[in-house]
Length: 278
Length: 355
Image 1 (spheres, rainbow over the protein chains, first blue to last red):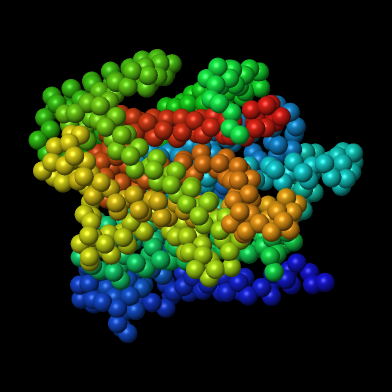
Image 2 (cartoon, rainbow over the protein chains, first blue to last red):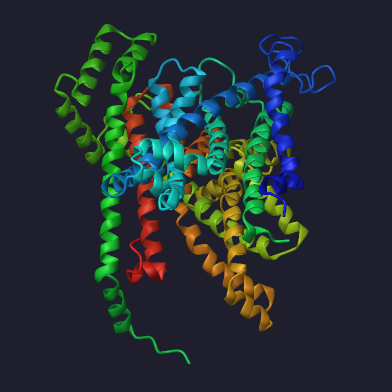
């Protein structure tokens, strides 16, 4: 009987999906060092893709491929910051508070449910409009501040079931504090699940950043995929038919987040015996 | 044999619904709605106090920077905002004024759409948004669950699986970007549909057939970009639920009886769709954000476009109104869905579970 990890690594779908994600991340990590400067005009206006310019040039003759690499890097950075900050809040609210039974858990649950239905983007628009200068990090934290509820909710249901296990009882009897039980006993047992949730959070945050950037409320420093799309719209690249400008940033978003969703589905299929259809 | 229709029995049935368990459920949901409205609007009120610059100063700075602004005009604007937000009064009075504004919907005159007043302006925008969001929300649910999610769990057809994969991928696409692709393909290249606005510039909004046709013509692209990308929200979950149902005894039994696959799917689908309904409110709250950006991209005159104008002109009362209306839309949609769910799930109707 092969272990779960072996099953996963040998899965064809999982291999392909991981390769795609790693490829995109590499484009963002290594790309900016090997391409030319993304902010200098190096070619003609709106040159179509060629060997010299892989994805052509924009209205000021700047290399779009170079822009794309930097944008992937900055978008990922925002996504990672947002993912971790929302994970921390989710563990505090969904984990720690729901570990304490009774009113505290009920209260935390109501707050979670309210934040769950509040439109995240509308709040972000208002805050971003009131903040004059927004760094990549601040935008990441802001997105994290309003995207934790579904995470808290799914962590809560996991913790509620783990809470009743014997080893938690043992820890409780030996007089450990609630915080140390949650962090040292319960969380390590759901690490795989936390990781899965984090993946979804990062990909969600990358898309959320793109959303607020498109209407011009994204980070004021840095250059993200959303900012690229904002330029596309404000320079009217679509009516002019400059497909090499507006297709790449969105396509990268689609492939990146879509593949992450696929990975979580594959993990579910492989690790969950009921879902194994073959 | 069908029973004859008896209105009295129907009435009795309805009345029984509002007896204990269901009434309890209703009250619980209503309290949640009110608490959610209260907390989210209070959040809106306190947000500016956490910010480095206050919105009124920002607005005044913007007005002062505009060419042709006289000191008298600036003073008049400053006085108007001081009065509107009660800035010379203690915090608790400002909070009272805030609720007064929310409840009377009197936000004064907009800067972004000067000289229109905000109340009617936002009401009109809300209607345009509803026209776009409600059909996209409901139709993507139906198609994503019944026509794709359930089918893909049963079918071995390659086309169905291909559609499924495409739908999942498109769902993670930003909706507005898919909209741009549609514009490029159908509006710019094939010239089938207009690429922006909700109606032709020369038409005056009315309920005449000519105007409605024109709106329908402009409606196609923004609607499609919300609808097609929304399908993927549902099919992954529905596929998983249907696979679980597929392994249950009643399906196995029906299979042994020799029922066709279509019939089996219908049975499994009915049971699998119930948990999916609980996802509708959450999808609505993310859909409103997506819709706002799609509106901005297509120049559709809904809440998103109004919000964009408000943000660019730093028209804070208009931003507040936009927030209030979009949150209300989501919370009330959520409440209505909860009630409908209570009706269709017999366990809630009979008080078997607490809801």
